[in-house]
Image (cartoon, rainbow, N blue to C red; front, top):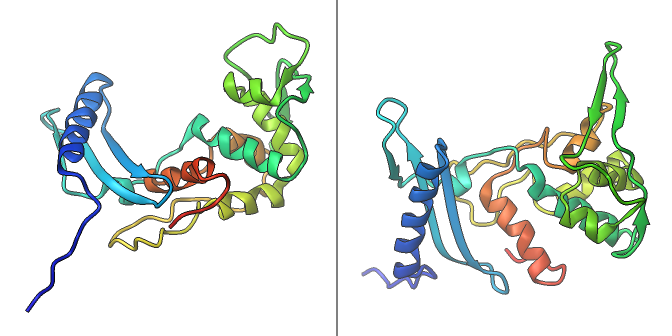
Length: 219
């Protein structure tokens, strides 16, 4: 005879999550979206919801595919928290250190072209604290801080946060994401603000749970 299995999922939270993510995909004309609810202290998952848009009809509906585990995407500015936390943990900055930010950061490429990192806002202040860099979501600030740690160390920090490998949940089809050693000129600065790497939604949730748990990774 079989045995009962107690799940951490909450039916009401799951239902509401499915509604919210479907509405968000419709409102933003997105191809897909996910909603994950967890308890940071234990890592328990309370809800996992995913919605996709039909390529032919444009209709949005929730799906049984485990999108939080199977889809990888460029995380963008959500990775800045990982970058800043890594530099803070290494003792290479402090929350209140004032850092002068250039208006742009040029990186010469092998073909003679130049890749330039910019911000969406003008730098009206002479300097910004590390806290302000994160709060204002500064690309230049993230790249500047990442350079203090360096290519190899920052790449290792990303791995330490769980990126580039599957989780302990071990669901079929789970993606490890895409993160390769930062060997090119622009790999480090772009990765510092979440470009040039790909992560799964569940990886990002696990990483942010580290912040909620005071630095402890909970599987």
